[in-house]
Length: 349
Image (cartoon, rainbow, N blue to C red; front, side, top):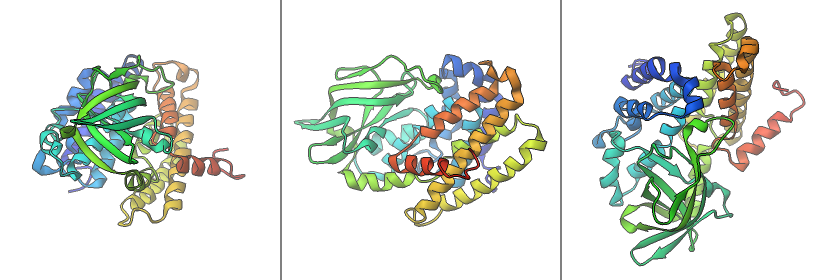
């Protein structure tokens, strides 16, 4: 079976063409509606990476990437809400703790939607969220700077660092409760529709039974760092969507470049040793960003003055591209990207 013929890719394309893309400009201004999330739940896409034994599809990496490209290119806000779900699923799939049997099935089948609240761990040794042992579990205190999908998610995977320097991940109901208070939804240059808030944690109590992962911080950080080396499929999705707005005589060469960067980036992503070729991975990530900005700029230029209207697709894609430049950013990826931008003959200058 080819990637394009995989049932989840077919469903993603149907969702993109029939629901997400036609409504994307309205969603950008009004917010991701519950109906979009319900359609994602019914599609089976929330279980794309989940074990088949728990109701998921355990799809190949190429299928996971293709569905991400399709959804992001159609409506980046909807893609961003649902993409949070996959880390909790993979976390549960790898744990042997009791929470696996309670939550993995409902998450894999799309009965529950999960968000994530752990990106702040990447600011270590600064500790925005601290965890303290309690008699019957754990207590979380501090601030989660970014949490996406508030009001849409059922649960969240929340992380902090304990006094003995261990990263602790636990599942929490995604609602206001004693010890957890959300901010007002953030107004952002892009993806305001994703319902992003910050979370104030003041002694939030979490039972031991809800813990999904606890390990020394360094052991968590090492594999996490590898995730941020590779090009993001959403970048290729936005690039493809932007090039669709450009006349073929100008888009053809850019599309050829897109296919080449994607091929090389995905070959590295599939490399059996994930820590090898780090510099090349970061270089391709930066190349993908550069091409995305070129493609979205071309879409705006092609649209002329009309592209400045908030109901025009080109300006939305350009703003979503700006968001992807910093999404999942680490100090290492930022340095590599800035170094490329500073090169005297950098093609994006």
